Image 1 (cartoon, one colour):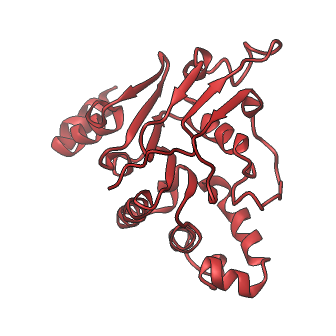
Image 2 (image 1 turned 90 degrees about the vertical axis):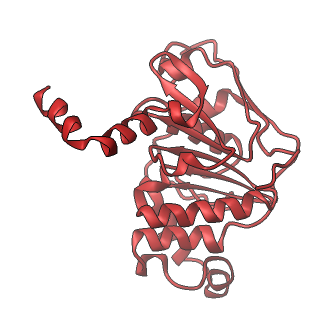
Length: 244
């Protein structure tokens, strides 16, 4: 793994609006008191429970960086069901370099991205996405096909819960590709629930909780501790769970 000096997202600053500063998404605990967030590693993970704000912040970074709200590259402009928050309008991104390429990959709207890719000219599809229809592959296969064929050097890649499409082996394959690209001047920001993904060596982890947003070590995440507890004594785990 090779750390790079220049980052495509060095820091984000939140400039709250004069009106609606107490409404969603600013009412989310992890975002409520967020003024700025700096990125020191080529690979960063946002972790937390559902509705904790991790995907909301990732989406805002994507939109403020020029990506389509539903995913894809900066050239994708489709909008089938707009649902994004207005947080991106309050974000200022500080960067020491501009990416040559990039992609916003989110599990919940990947079907729509795959449809847009299928509509591309066959020569472009062959050169950029591997040539085979993403709809003719399994969810996991098509997801990894985009990562393997579309992702390249000097890129900014924002991934929203990629584990939703991937098996354990698929998650390991994604980590291999992340490792390859982080050594080629790429930056990844990933919202995830996966203790497999967030174990990537050298990654920064930001935890979104009811107390706010804090940087944390892998072993201190709820995901790691709960999974470790489950594997060490699943019988006791289930007994406690079912009694409650």
